[in-house]
Length: 357
Image (cartoon, rainbow, N blue to C red; front, side):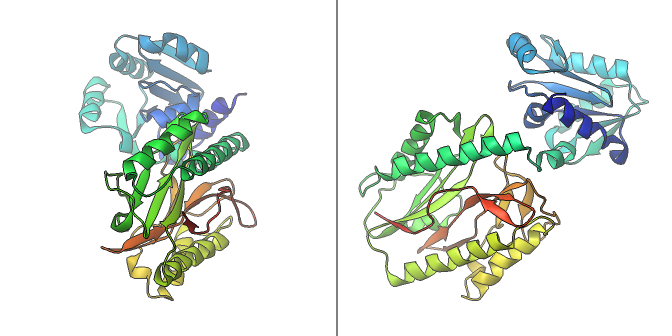
């Protein structure tokens, strides 16, 4: 039995709890997880003992090469899906509420028999995706290693006078040279006051001496993401900057130390905030401590204040506390880690020292 077939069977085992007879999967990442199909247009109907993927003629050859379930190729995929669902006529059809527009929902509702009820589901596939298989973990490791090498290759080219956009372009270029499909998200490069913006976009700002440089980057390898943030300083940092960096590093290390199987995600977030609170810095920490990653850069679980998720062995997550002070700058330190029975394994090999260039 293939890994994809096993995943579909695990999904079908959740139908009774979700009170559905079949599931219409419209998220392309979920379709890839369940079938291996990597095209940009598809629908998947999962039944308890069967599955059918529908795509258009652009992917005629590809779908037959990649999937191990029934495939339908049609110049009009959506009407084909509607016809298949009409024939199947499930009493309770699950839909992925987070991945279906109101327009498409209304269309399905009008096309399906009145006897079929559309049931909104949440995270049925995403919950399965949160626990990575050994094969997925291996790909994530390779993505992490490639990401770190791209960072190292880029650092050698960073100097005052170039722009944030120059650095971001070089990072993305190095990823490609090393074999990545591309960045897992838009590479963040922020210098000086811009480091106070957690999701700053690379600008034409020129790098200058005596300022911080924040780089948040992730590679995509065989569909799987990595994520890392590192801090650099152009010239020798002052005492205040060193103290701030040490505070964030202590919060990150404390959060990593708190991670293990069966620990609540919110508890890890709480550890990071308490560490910063001892330095009166918690009010400058404006986002969650981390998130899961895999086929998406942001997956379950979320390491946030109110998240009720429980960490499980096999989850790949980030740990990334930060402190952001307007007009002065910010610091974030981020690793990709793997939850284990006894704790966690930090996958990111890049040193966490404040790099002075």
